[in-house]
Image 1 (cartoon, rainbow, N blue to C red):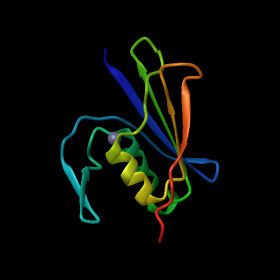
Image 2 (image 1 turned 90 degrees about the vertical axis):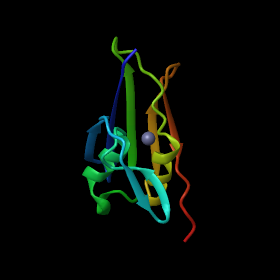
Image 3 (image 1 turned 30 degrees about the vertical axis):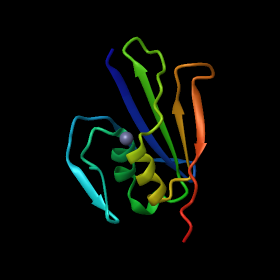
Image 4 (image 1 turned 90 degrees about the horizontal axis):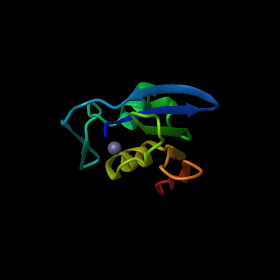
Length: 113
Ligand SMILES: [Zn+2]
């Protein structure tokens, strides 16, 4: 079943970036590593790009996913997205799950400087 994914970046209590998933396949090279490109289908990355670099550090990212009938589905960001979120300083991510209570909140550990 087709699933829809959306993401919102919230910084200092305000929504600063919003995006939905899209189709794409280009790659992004960052810090000597290869990631899925900001032009990819991943809503998380599209949302943080829209938010702008100065709004990302310390922010919370909300990601939701639901099936066509509206049932919440697992929306934990993939490994590539998690790595990018950590590098950018996103503080935590909250995402929908497919079982009660239908969400999970995860702290993203800071990269030691
Ligand atoms: Zn991803």
